Image (tube, rainbow, N blue to C red):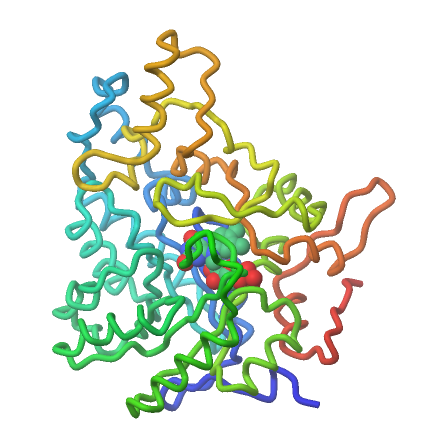
Length: 414
Ligand SMILES: Cc1cc2nc3c(=O)[nH]c(=O)nc-3n(C[C@H](O)[C@H](O)[C@H](O)COP(=O)(O)O)c2cc1C
């Protein structure tokens, strides 16, 4: 009987354990978590979501404080169009977060950065260009482009000296999205080094509509594999979403995937950035507690726990401090939803906004408990103490369980 360790992900001559821990912003997939994956011979992701805040927390910089102070006079203004990110600060924060992580890397694996294109930062093209090129400057092994695939992204880093040597990949949820991307980038003569295929059971934002339940990861992987074969393109495919055991992973590897991307199992790792009490919420969740809704201002459905504190929160939009979802005209769907409520309740007290949420603030404060569809099975991966709390696990334990387990077994911690 085969297990994950019988397979290797090949990038040229380099061989890796075919396990990639997916990016989880904001700093849920920490540097510590990504570095463990690399140490163990796989691939880990950090994320550049709210990079200024991550830098402030990790390196005592004061980017968020400085920006908030600069735009202080605008805090009570419902028009957020004047808010801009300082591109120099963006580059510096990226170089710090990515650079320090890369300096700490040990082992044969790799560390990639997850860059979500929906973070349009009120100047989508300029900020994305800085994010991509600064990550390459800082020596990142690879970049995974996700959430909102901007068809011109490869072009934004085409002049970088590392453009052809860093591993560049994209996340798609359909063969059509991949076709569009390949068509658009054909003139650069630069294929993606890998394609993550994210199915409907993943955590975070979904690349499907609210009809997500009609789709199936294995079918999409087969469609994309057939398309690439017909086009005679050899690009490693990485399956993601709902791969919970080593046996689940092995099944994808046996059917043409070059690796798997996993995340949910690692949300309860000691190295994961979620606060300890939130990890317990993930452990406690039952199947009915996991919902998909449309409160993300990005327009993508998002999966989360039903008791997520962000749902219904009516906080004032915090774009002077963050503003990562501003669309270039100073708009964000949360600002619109919030202003509608303010019009109904002009005193601004006890406002509840149900339609959308202030995603920047709530992800930053770990109050938006996004999760994968199999989160309810996390309780079966560990031990429960007499006081009712669940034991968190080391990333190494979870990684090795994926790598070596057979027969759908899950190894409990010692
Ligand atoms: C808590 C959490 C946060 C996530 N955040 C992101 C993100 O910021 N960017 C992204 O591309 N994917 C994100 N994802 C998706 C994962 O990277 C991964 O592709 C997916 O969850 C894999 O499925 P699994 O969780 O069932 O293993 C997130 C997933 C989780 C569970």
